[in-house]
Image (tube, rainbow, N blue to C red):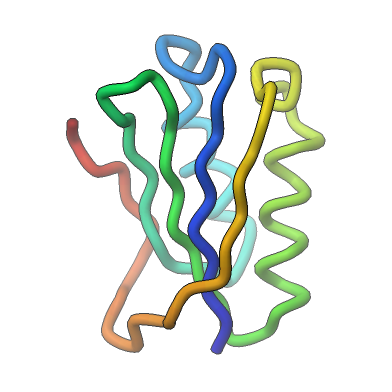
Length: 92
């Protein structure tokens, strides 16, 4: 299992970023969450059994209409959470 934490900055709040990300996630075999941060960024944590699946999901976010709102993204590998189920939007 592979997992990543991604911080997106740019005009990523107030544009449906979290909802679009959740919709994109439904097309992939990934689990995780997405949430707004107080500093205006959006944080995403996602994991998948296959690294290729996770990379394809993150690439789909970049290639979607959300890509035009993203100015910068910071990606780091993290430890997977085996008990994580589904993909959700966490409230601020």
